Image 1 (cartoon, rainbow, N blue to C red):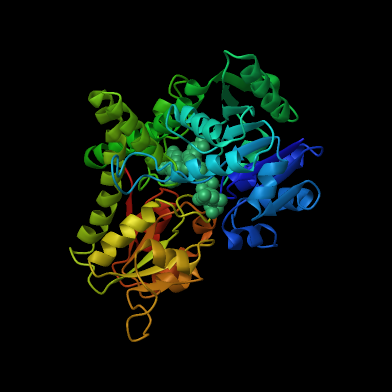
Image 2 (image 1 turned 45 degrees about the vertical axis):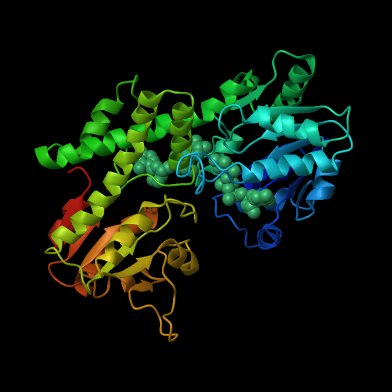
Length: 459
Ligand code: UDX
Ligand code: UDX
């Protein structure tokens, strides 16, 4: 069997690497239009940082795992084609700011139709609005050689970045949606079930109709994000009342109906999925004439935006209502630990707010490149005369970032930040020295003993 995947991003790359790693008799080819990205996948410096990914890729690459820019051959040879290209929020026209932009998905369908000379299974891996499969099928059938059959399956990815390899090798569940009402549809579903059954228990592989599968991905992300917005909303109430949000989260999380996960109060959730997928859900509700349902889910985003801006306002008000010319050390820029991904990271919004207030940002992140930080902050590295940007100082060393700073903000919960020498940091900072722990990961009592003024979320 041959599998190909269109799109070698954070999802397509690791997912296909895992399939190749677990199924030695399947040849897996990942194709992407971005040549630099493919070159990186073929090098020792993978484009995605993910614990354990290097080993999986090294074991399978060149054996039954290939990365290429040649999508034509990849499509022609494949029995199953995964589509894992991006589906960003639309920035133009109808649904701008909410609906998913399906441009790349449709381009993939047209490529598949054009280059296929036999029937194939097409799998939606990207997160898509409900009923996208219908559109895909129509495009495939209208543009291909008559007589070919394309079965469209939905197989959404539930991996979280930073734990992708663990999530892929031992998933809570694999979800496969297809046309349950036809013989060909059932056969296609079974073909994909058999691929995953190479390493996933059969009772963890759920099969549904197409629409349930497409919708489940959006709903899973909406429910997860809703939990974070819920606890973040309570964090503000804790700050006013003397309750401690971590204690509240622990106390409610021991109720098995609630559960302990995704109750960690934070500076706000980020990542490529939560905001995009909830907005997509909101748009679908509006489209189907359900404005109250749309408003209900949109509030999850409103609360998240509020939490991010609340954090930057807290920094400014604490530093005597001005950060103009003051150095603020930002530790962490990725949207969570153990990834180099910064999409929708809270650090970018807090950073932009502080730059608007004329602060000098000294940023340190173990994995995010300076280029990425400048891009996210909408700043250039040099001014018109070629002088370096004086408002942003990217530091390889957290101590250098903190040196001469008035405040230090924890933006990402990297483990390495917990073990820093805070006495040394304190000695290098202006006094009073303020710490804003946007992830509640530091030992605040210890910091206070050193002399820091500490502000945490929800305490
Ligand atoms: C994926 C899904 O696409 C998204 O819908 C889901 O919600 C999360 O996972 P991700 O893998 O994180 O997104 O996206 P990205 O890292 O941007 O990868 C997409 C890749 O597709 C890029 O490398 C891009 O170059 C490639 N691409 C895009 C193509 O090969 N062809 C195209 O036409 C468009
Ligand atoms: C998410 C889903 O978890 C995954 O199932 C889906 O396939 C893609 O979207 P991801 O965005 O990679 O995964 O990371 P996740 O661990 O969900 O974290 C998202 C954001 O929420 C991060 O910014 C994280 O820091 C934040 N978060 C998470 C909290 O603030 N509190 C929590 O308790 C958990």
